Image (cartoon, rainbow, N blue to C red; front, side):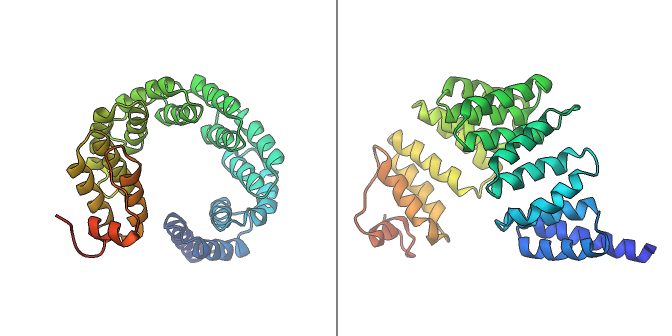
Amino acid sequence: MSKAQNRLQAQALQEAIHALRARQFARAEQIAASILRTARTDRAALLVHSHALLGQQRAGEAVAALEKAALRGPDPELETLLGAALCESRRAADGIAQLRKTAARRPPFFPAFQELAGRLAKSGDLREAIAVIEEAQALSPDSVDLKLDLARLCLQANERARARDNLVAAREAAPGRPDILVELAWVHFLDGDYAEAAGTYRHALGLRPEDTQTRANLAMCLAEMGDRDGAQAALRTVVRGRPHLLTRAAYTLAVTSHGRFFFRPSAAAKFLGADGTLKP
């Protein structure tokens, strides 16, 4: 292949990667497929192509090419994607087996542990999912992502104290990560510590102000604290310019102990200003 062809292929690959990141899965698939037609063993194009197929719920179409690529030699990233594709194509037992095999490799490839734990948790085997992340943590005790993963699994298993301990440790290691903050705030909320939860949600919103889910959760905290005005102001911010979030905002008002219930969606829309007006 000439230098000009290599340059064009590299540009096409970058375009496919950008499309994938933008969740333009059909476009990413099309570009990656065109690369693979002339470079069948191009690893990067295969990864993009397979991810694009998974993004379109067409995992079964990705399996054959990934299985063939995995035979060329150890490649934990490809093998992990193969495991995910097998699980998504209703071959969960094969997928779990593949992920176990990849997680057993050394040096460790931690995304394989995370994918395996996620699949086990999805199937209802939380104990084993937690054990998988614990094994990964033993190999990388300072990993913030593994602390977050373990906290989420512990929360699913209703082990809130352990989840909180891991989230606090993760926050101390990475104080600027809003994903850690929102998980920690949710644990505080479940524990009934609404003031602490509200403060943590505010911190997260300072880092990611457009996060509507976090703002709605802040509204729940404020409502539970008796701050109706603050809760309603937060929810009005949520629905402003986003009428599709009216149901979420109305639900938030309804489920809190100091909230409001509306029999008609139009009444909720008027109260929250989703109809272009605001109730004083």
